[in-house]
Amino acid sequence: MSTTREECWNALAQLPQPTLAELFAADEARVEKLTRRIELDDGGIRFDWSKTHLDDARIEGFEALAKASDFDEMRRRLFAGEVVNPTEERAAEHSALRGVGKDSSVEEAEALRARMLMLVQAIHDGVLGEVRHLIHVGIGGSALGPALAVDALAREDALVDVHVVANIDGLALEEAFAKCDPATTLVAVASKTFTTIETMTNAQSALRWLADNGVDDPTGRVIALTAAPEKAVEWGVDETRILPFATSVGGRYSMWSSIGFPIALAIGVEGFEQFLAGAAAMDRHFESAEDSDNLPLRAAFADLHYARILRAQTRAVFAYDERLRMLPDYLQQLEMESNGKSVTVGGEPAEITAPITWGGVGTDAQHAVFQLLHQGTHLVPVDFIASIEPGDALDPAHHHILLMNCFAQGAALMAGKSNDDPHRNYPGNRPSATILLDDVTPESFGALIAFHEHRVFAAAVLMDINPFDQFGVELGKEIAKKIEAGGERFDPSTEALLKAAALS
Image 1 (cartoon, rainbow, N blue to C red):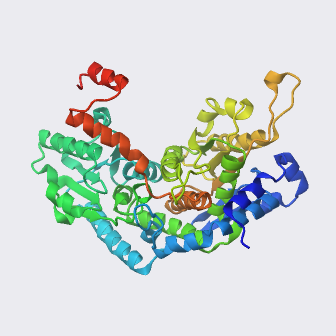
Image 2: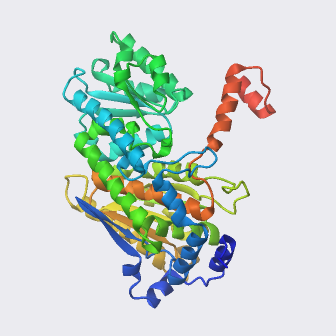
């Protein structure tokens, strides 16, 4: 008789809970067992999970859970382009955009990418005239992914100056306007449906800004990134400047598609292809590696040990590299929008789903939140993410101090320090994982993002939830539309707020 999910969870919950110090003392090969390096063409990434509470017994228990959850079959369906989003009856084919997936989907993705990269190259070659700036308007995954990638990979070396605007607050758009010359600015409008109210409102304001500043044909400056090309045509965009992507690609998984247009424009065609190649390398690892040798699955084991067995409500991510300063924000959306659900795939109440993901940047965060991590009452698993090579050309002391602080924090969280004065006592036994890149390159960055995508999927399978729908974001939007239409009555607090803001 096969073991059920619940029996696996119960067995995991009954395991003894040794401290990190005891785990290291009991196994001299612990670091070797729980550290793995992924090799890439231009370097690699080291994944070290040894400072978590995973051990042989826990890994064996989670491997049994993966078997009971039919993980191998779900992974096969993902890469085969079969339905893995049952509530919307859709596949999730972001890996096909990188060349790993169903053959027909890969071929379609390659054709769409070739179209996009031809346009990118034409812009770089001056076919559209002088283009120095791009204002990219989108929201959610249509904005966070491109903003993160451009900030991480382009910076002062950007071939085109890219400004990503998501917020409907007009201050965000005005800030972008102030940094751009209308005569040399394109506008990318990124919307899966080409109806998203925040994005389309920002797009209209961008066209008005172009017109007010002497651009004769503002719509001719628009590049549409959408899964609804017919809507873009209706809006007035020329067909030659519409870059479609498949409906089987969710927003938070879409930077590999035409949503990545601003990334390619900023880092160039070759850089974008390296970005995809790094992600594909991680796809191939996730598709083929078995049991705990599979890095995203191993990470999911640790995540769920803390979230379900030890009831940790949050998980923190700290990027010890300024180039990755937006990564905690990106992962917050990826993880919480994907796995922030309260029911299983079958519609039953879920025991537990995604922890709250939060974080910050390097030594800044140490002086802001690490007090709680070291001495607070909350259990907070931590991921440290850093690069061996610096992103700056200053005195190497800057980067040495940065890395020393990164590694020291993980050591201190684990070891703690006893003191008779309770105010100066550090309990220790606080878990962390470290992801160490050789350097932040398009390839390593692509692999890093794909690792986290698959980590989210693996955790979802083990929790028996659907990571690809996002109905939770819709209710507030529906109520906003009702407010705009008028005639609806709401709770007394909302009514008072509407009156105070002169919206009723």
